[in-house]
Amino acid sequence: MSDPSSQPLPIGEIVQGPSAFEQFLENHQKLIAVSAVAIALSIGGFMVYRTIQKDHAADAGAALSAAKDIAALEKVKVDFSDTPSAITAAVGIADKLWSNGQQDEAISTLREIIEKFANHPAAVVAQNALGYRLLAQGKTDDASQVFQAVIDREDGRYLAPAATIALGDIAKKSGDLEKAASLYKKVSSEYNDSPFATVAADRTKFLNFTAPVEVEPPPAVTEPPASLTKPDDLPSTNPSNANPLLENLNQSGAKAEPEATQPTTPVTPP
Image 1 (cartoon, rainbow, N blue to C red):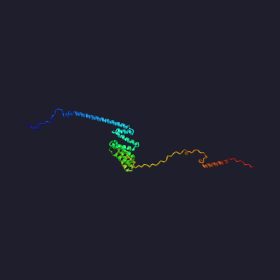
Image 2: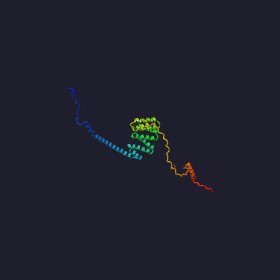
Image 3: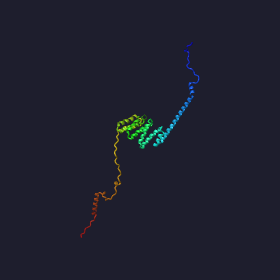
């Protein structure tokens, strides 16, 4: 009897009939078809949504471009609240309110943008504008906090140099020249690729410059009246125009001349 261990063993068997993958397709054909239709509908629906969204954004942009006053900008803000144009319209409303002298309303609008759209790229623009508006009102402490918030934002690097210069200007105005110089130099070193680096360098250069004291200009010289520049012609007998010495000489000569020229008549005795 031969040893079974010495006999070759089969590695595998050839399966006759459809494969397991084909059986899976056959058994789940309907499910696969339904899934394919669902995927196609999802892709189609997403494309339609993107198209509608793009059209909506385009309409918002067109409405924003046509808006010329606060009422029109407010309509864009409300009708297209889910688009970036709404935030841009809000910034425009703040600018127009400020121009109309409604400073407190403008500042409130900027604060609303910052609070409601904190993560939107336009929020840092509104925040930087708020800092300058507060500075214009003389609220340097509030403005300093806002400018520092702009610097601390990760998405505000392109506005950080301007905000830093503003902090330097506040320090200079308060008399802290050392702090102002430090802030200006920070812009030149940390943001040397920014156009504001040149501005900061100029600020540093003229930091200790003292403007000359302004004085009141002398009063403007007006042309004197014609009566003073060219007196009216007066008769020669006017004592104000006559020279006393020449007049006496003339009078003496007038008296002496008849005596000299008078002919002498011989006197005949009676």
